Length: 124
Image (cartoon, rainbow, N blue to C red; front, side):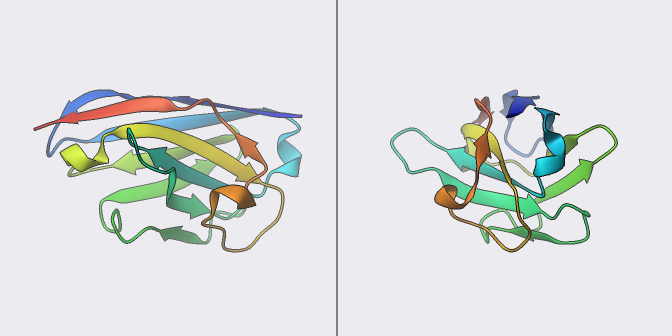
């Protein structure tokens, strides 16, 4: 099995920066694509960004393009979500997710493993 644990959430002012981490443990060799999603109160969980297993491909939702960066350190089995120029509308619980295969995956149902989430609150 695979366990994903997010960390790094918190309260930040608009315009500020934050870096989230997602540490994987267990059968980490079974994970290839890693993604980040977020869910704001009363809204559906939405795709934020993802990275391939070899870290050579990243893709993002239009709403965060240019402000968020996904990266990974395979030696540490950790994926990161660097966020800059944060806006109040970025307030949400952020989840990392893993999938066993390569490709482009932006739907919640396409991921096999999920973390418990970390809260990010951006004040105006």
